[in-house]
Length: 231
Image (tube, rainbow, N blue to C red; front, side, top):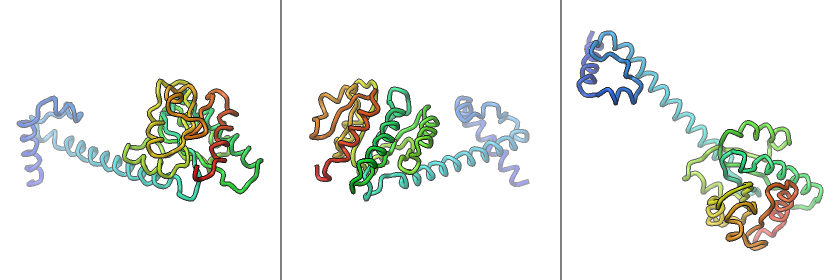
């Protein structure tokens, strides 16, 4: 048929123009382009699969972008923001325990101030255990995890946050703290981060804390949340 003849022509053109390295890059090195009739169906299958994969990637990217917009802190709420790879040294399990303690202590203290929420940006091997911890602590409605974001998606999270917290147990410097401060956020920084001594002015632009002590972290959160809005 005309359709088959067209495919044969395409296959012959591919054979003439594409070398084995290009075919290998696409995972098509097993196609026998010198035998168009037997390769036609295989090529069609590959093209259909490639198109379906691209469609899935585009759909997934759109879902993540929409979720990120939904998870961005709202202007009428107060929130702590953290951005880190979900690995052990970032100390996110203790951070969640400290946040749970902060919430309980804030409720016990009463007052009319808002109870701050927490947004964890990033991804990594500890994501599943962090999600389980959030549910176990009853924090599902006040902790959001939008996932890994591209750099251009970060400004709205910095803009919507009230303070930045970095709880690493070890960090040579901590560039995310610089980024947060550049966005105008007060910071809570582990005293095991190299930047803490140089960047944090206690009670002026933030507080430092011992990252191994859950209640000390919670107290730092309480101190930050208690500051006047214009400070």
